[in-house]
Image 1: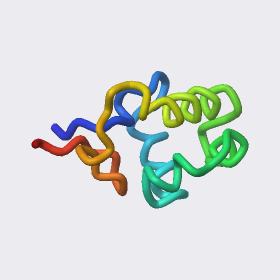
Image 2: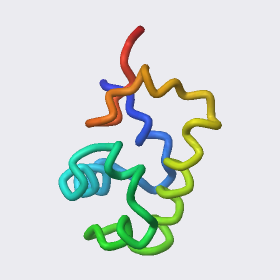
Image 3: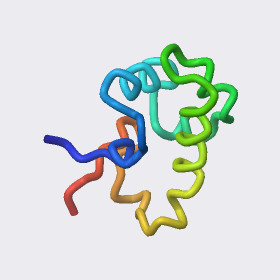
Amino acid sequence: MLESLLDEIPQLGETRRAALLDRFGSVTAMRKANAEDLAATPGIGATIATIIYTHLQNLSQSGVEMSDVDMATGEILDT
């Protein structure tokens, strides 16, 4: 099973993750979106969008090395 930085976001299951990647195309694009843009994704809503937005904005502070992440899919790469 692939490990993704999106796996760490509460209430973000496989269906919602797929909807976000389908709408935005990449984790990089999701990180550039604001909470309102995220909430406009089917199945997300304002509360979950805020959780996602906060998590993605705090990635650099969480010790995750962006060079170790495929920013298109969010997959954490083996180094």
